[in-house]
Length: 92
Image (cartoon, rainbow, N blue to C red; front, side, top):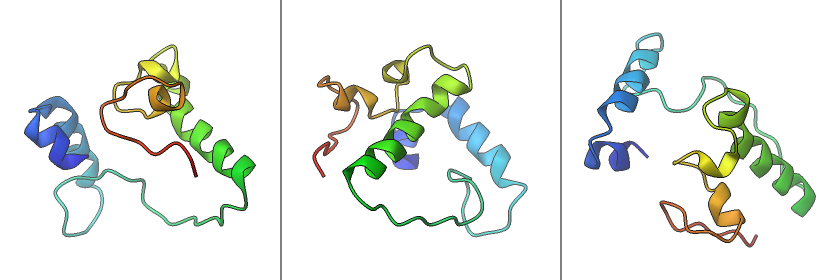
């Protein structure tokens, strides 16, 4: 994602990621993922779909968009049969 943003000169998002990185130690220039590890074993299609839906709906919950598929960097469009920014495997 960082390479894509850099290549397409989306500096405003890179600036935000760099800002959030300042609060954390590490060898990276940007903070993309939330700190902490909370692994959870995906136990079937229902649970996988639940996790994908949760991820897709985060921008909606934050008020950035009104529908998950409107978020530019979301794979929600792919799951609706539309073309997204990157090729996504929707069959697991």
